[in-house]
Image (cartoon, rainbow, N blue to C red; front, side, top):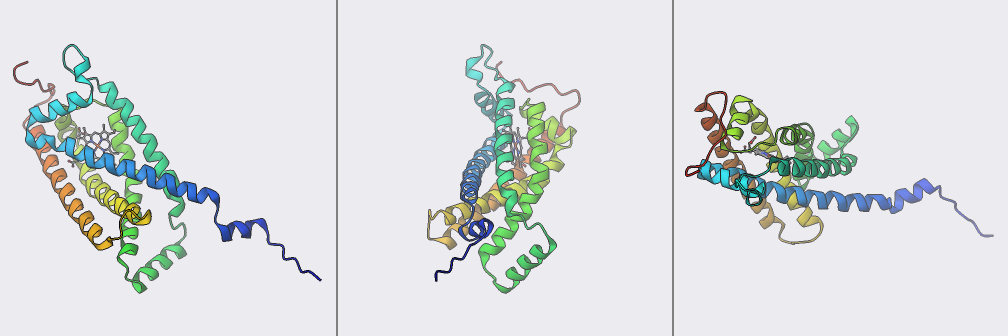
Length: 243
Ligand code: HEM
């Protein structure tokens, strides 16, 4: 006599894993790499204010396509469209990341127990990515929406936003959260997809990058505050010398 064991479809999925899950994993890594690389470039461009107003002005004009206008002045619409694209990538990244979030108190307790018992550095890194991801869920859209609705960037215009419109408060919270999240994220992607076997070297690099990016970010923020403090309202956009 043959005995057939019929498994309900749901339990087969439970064993084999849902095909969507592998796809969601790839989307999460791909959008994460894109956003992590964007952040690395973004913070460097933005820190050109440390080299002076002229340097930051020129970076903005190049990024906004100043070479295509007769006056040499860029088009803020470029920033607006790019910001909408980045927002879409952030939404996609958050949507696939949400499924990993511990949803119930019991799951949080299990995670904490696991971290206390298995003192593995990667579990701690994952925990910090979870916490910073939660913070970014609220802070990142505020900044990106501002760049969509008010895309004018320049030494004076940015200083006005940072100092007179109090965006420094947002940036002071956003900067550490996004830098930690992005660097741990890039580290985890590199380990997960087997880009390197040298975990401890990569962990050190991630730590150095976190300290480096927060440092240039804080110095830039202080520059904008200092600049904004020296400007009286209404703010006149910066005009480079010799124009
Ligand atoms: C394409 C969209 C974006 C544009 C056009 C943009 C532009 C800017 C600009 C011009 C500043 C300088 C201050 C100001 O003018 O207000 C700034 C600061 C900042 N942005 Fe963005 N940003 C974008 C997306 C993002 C994203 C997705 C993140 C990370 C979630 C981010 C994180 C930051 C941080 C942390 C600062 C403060 C840096 C510091 O403290 O020196 N930005 N952004």
